[in-house]
Image (cartoon, rainbow, N blue to C red; front, side, top):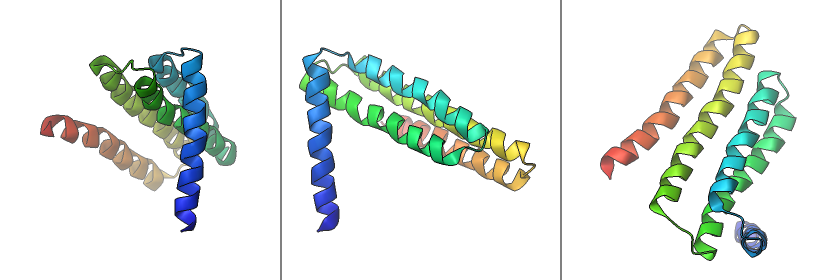
Length: 135
């Protein structure tokens, strides 16, 4: 019950933001690109061990990822290129953020964690590859 309330409230807020961005005719691809740019700031903070601040910025980057598709649907600007672009940029965002973690753990001489992040790296890439091959 409480998770449904949170989901409903979150959807209401996201829908409001989507309508606002659509009103100003913001291109969904610009929203996607903004999200990947924010990922560099996340990686920078993670690479310097600032996990709380990096995590908060990561939430902001995630918001952009949630908004781009909604804006495309509401503004009726959905394209095959846009879907492809979003998918590719999402993987770049994953890689950028994971590199920040890898840098931090390497600087701390925590080889096990470097390897663990590398495994997560592979999973992020292989998930997209497997989906593309399945389609």
